[in-house]
Image (cartoon, rainbow, N blue to C red):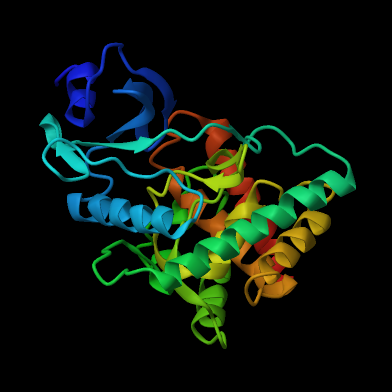
Length: 309
């Protein structure tokens, strides 16, 4: 594989080795390209197709042009956004956003009621702004995975068969299968569901506090699905928080300042759907890490019990 400097040089002059800052689905490096800071992304082979990645970059470029706060994709020396690498990988680069994540998955949210309310009202408004901006820009040439009922609750979910998480007991597997069937029927018969392109991974790590306000990064899992799924994802890391109801209310109120918000019951349903998806996602990523597998299973089981009643 080419050196990181050689890869980054497709977007301009690079004099220092890029610095690894994140290694999740993609490996993300901070670097200086010409006179600007950038994030160089080396995409994991096989996770998203070239067409899907190019679609993500076209969409986020249009969002940035519209004024939505996200990282603007940079054009490479061949006039496109994406460069092919050996081994089926791709590289892209986006402008660097100065800021810090509003939280982390393994760190409980802290703050007074007023501080939490202010933050999650802003998060709700950010997601409403994303959905509104998306409805205003061209998306006919955006080809991304579906986050529909089959992708979430079908026999082959997009993120894996969550009921086959190896840490589940037989009774827990039975519970998740019952929940899957009931939730599928509920979802496909739900009235007046807002759907379209969604971020699909609105975790605290992907929401930045910047000098200009909140911004959203990492659209790697974006696709066409239920807008309320973005809200459920924004809540999922707080499922055990003693102030979960406060966070939920603030999120819905913030969303409702710009767009029609789902009700509290819908929000909890889509939070459950995110928990189920993550219970499947961890199967291929948590091999050998029994605590990680179990943590995702515990969350899915608890929220399934809460929803099923």
